Every structure is written in structure tokens, then in C-alpha cells.
Length: 126
Length: 300
Image (cartoon, rainbow over all chains, first blue to last red; front, side, top):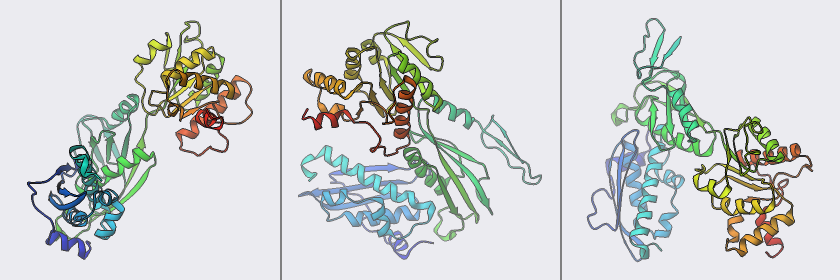
């Protein structure tokens, strides 16, 4: 049902936890299924130095969040801004039809995070 | 056999008799009508096919509004979240979509999709009738109103002359307003997908209306007149301080190129262009010039 990569990230999540010194933090929620994802980053020199997530929801949400948080760490803001749902799904491997919305949710969190960063610390943007 | 009683939400399924009674607290059909009347968008999801056990029933419906709120259900959980996400894309893209789900996942992972059945859900856009605002109540506007009404547009007519802005002249219009153009604009709450056609008694009024209309959110903005008149009007407004970029979406001369001469033929040409915009069709080859193209070609 789930790829080995999904199950691996679910059972051994990377970059999970809080980031008290975050430069930007967002919380997104799916109002229908109740999934919740918090994404936070520390940025310096226009590069994401640290990323952390906390999530409450299904297996694919946990895995997608873990994969995304791992993906963006070390990337420039510009590189991070170019990540879309299709790219995330390439990283996660195939998801069941009923779970693709979690990838959309993770990307939505990333977009909101970058918007928040650009308004709170414009100099960090690029 | 299924019966719908629009009173209380989701009640019972009497499977023994093969007769299913479905109650709704909020009548989903009334909500669709209310949504469309208020000019808002939505998407309606309907379970069209069921095989095996699912946490809902065939024909169950969920309406997703453009603000993300929902009424009704297609079973809840991950499936409903997926349908909600798809519904938002369907209302944006204005294209229906069929989704299929397998609820026979491994219970060990506890995602809730363990009922064992499969289901198909059809998600269709619920869109308001587009509104056409006709500025000017002359014979060309009369013809446009008739053709546009037949094509599904809701007609609103504005003219500063009571004799022209009348119910007798525009029986198909939703609203007919006899008022000065400058005082009407602040009162208009135009939806972003509205269609504006400027066709007043003369070029001075066309210009005044255009100066107000270019600042409005509109899916379609057109003005009657020859290329020479369009250029003169735009140049004059630019001298008054309007930026040329404001004319980027102005379709003028209006309509597609079919050699239209009479008011009725012009109406067909203009409404054809409006339909193409509504249906996202590329009509670059047959559309008349856009004002900005004209300005650019002649060095403004």
C-alpha cells in the first residue's frame, strides 16, 4: 500500500520536533480530515540552515512532512520556492489516491512559510 | 430506490427493504442555488458508484464552497479530504473530474480506509451565471442583451437616460439602472468574472466610462468603436494620467472579425468573443485588435 520510503519516514521521521529560534513558522490544517502540520525554518545567508516539522495525522502526512523538511534543509530560498507538489511526489514515491492531498498540504505549508519569511525578513528572501 | 427528504441531516439507510431514505438538514440543492445567486463558486461531489462496503452510500453528496466550507458528506476521513482538495481545483479550472478510491488498505497503518469497498466520486463545478454589464442602452446594447441572455449571461444595463434604461427596452435584464455613470460605479460590486461592455451614446461618454471601468476587476472589458476612435480615446486618457498598462485587457474594437455590420451582427460578434473568454478558448486569430496592441503598433 505504501512505498518503503513512506513507511521508513513514518517510522523514522527526520527533522521532527520544535525549532524555538525559527525565523518563520506556519501551522496549516486540513479542515475536512483534521490533519495538522507545523513547519519551521532557520535561515541565514539566504539558505535554510534548519527545518523542523510537527504533524498530527495519517501515515502519508507524517512521511510527506518528514521528506519535505529533509529536502529543504540546506537549499537556498530560491531553490526552495521552486519545489512543487509534483516534485514532492517524486520524492515520496506513489501515494494512494486518497492521500495525495497531504502532498498538497505540505506544499501549501511551504508556500505560506516562504511568504511569511519574505514579509518578516525581506533581506533573507534572496 | 432512494427518496430525498430535505429536512434533517443524514439519517438512515434501511438496507433490508432495499429502500434508502436520506434526510438533509440543509438542502444541498437550495445551497447550490443560493451560492450561484450570490455570484459565488463551488463544486459538487457525488458518489456515483459503489462496490462493497464504504462509510457512505451511492448518490451521497458534498458541496464545497469557494471559501473551503462544506455541506453534506461523501463519507469523511481521507477520501473526503482528497475530494475537498480536488473540488477546489475543479471550481478553479471549471472542469469536472472523476475520482476512484480503494478502501481496502492494511488496517495496521490505521488510515481509516479499511471498509473494504471501492467507490467512484464525480466532482463537478458549480459556477454562477456570468454577469454582463452593458454601459449604454442604445440599439447595439439591446441586441447584445438579447444574444447574451440567450447565451446564459445575466444582464445589467446602465444608461444616464431614463428613456433608454427602461424595462421595456431590456425585458431580459436582471437590473436596469438610469443614473449618471460616474455615480453608478462606486455603487457597483462587480465580481471578478464580470463582463463589461462600453457602448454609450457617444465617444465622450465611452471615454468617461472607460476611465472608470479599467480600474475594475473584470474578465472581459470591451468598447465599441473603430481603431481610430480607440486610439484617440486611450491616448486622451493617458494624457489625463492613466497608465497604458490599464488598457492591456481592453478589447477594442470589440468582438471577433466576422464582418458584422448591423446591431444584431455586432451582437453576435461580441457575444462570441465573450463566450470564447468564458470557455478559455484562444481566439487570437479571429479576435479584433486589443487597444494596447494598437497603441504599441503606432508607438503610442
